[in-house]
Image 1 (cartoon, rainbow, N blue to C red):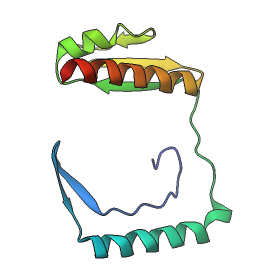
Image 2 (tube, rainbow, N blue to C red):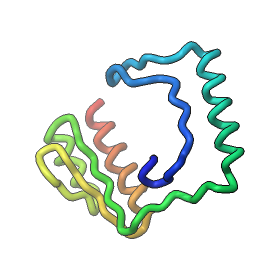
Image 3 (tube, rainbow, N blue to C red):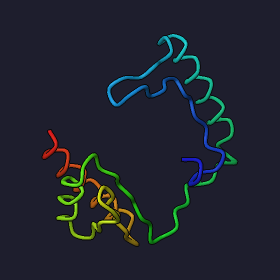
Length: 112
């Protein structure tokens, strides 16, 4: 998020180990980290700037296999970049997001 919203606060309470596992803090410790970060963020709210995204924007999605990437191109506007990668570009951020959700839902349903 940092490139889009410089100075954003984060409360990192777990780290990915794999697709199915994470290494996390004890809930009591995580709660303290989150509370402190939220407090600092609210204190600095007057200096915060809204996120900025240059439009048109491009979302790039890398798939596990070429079949999923190919199926993603069934969504209008999804363009194959390479064997595993599909890009969606749009000047309308809502339409771009909806295209991404459509690609995600289509390929997730097929992959499962």
